[in-house]
Image 1 (cartoon, rainbow, N blue to C red):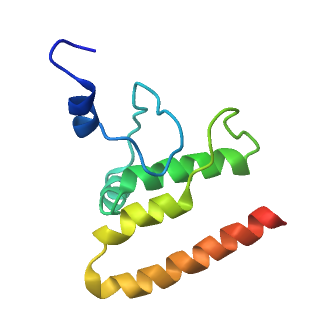
Image 2: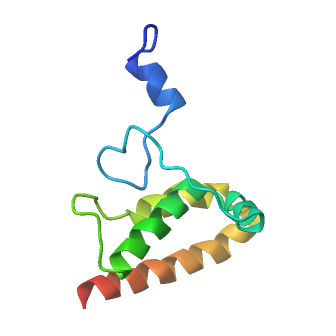
Length: 110
């Protein structure tokens, strides 16, 4: 920790991710996307959590889940993202999130 940076200050500047249980890596992983893909990703409310989710799901699909990485907490992600959606669209978004949660839960129980 650098001089003058107390834990409260660091938490304000670098808040923990609500979608991940446990500690995040000290250094961010950075990737570049084609311009149009980058634009689309940045338009997603809470896009960091979404990109993290996509990467971890992709690793699991390819049979390479991170050994010690906790599962993405979908409910926490929804709680984080839903308030950022315009009020007019929240009811529809909440319905989609509810269906998604149900599908994920059914997939985990099979």
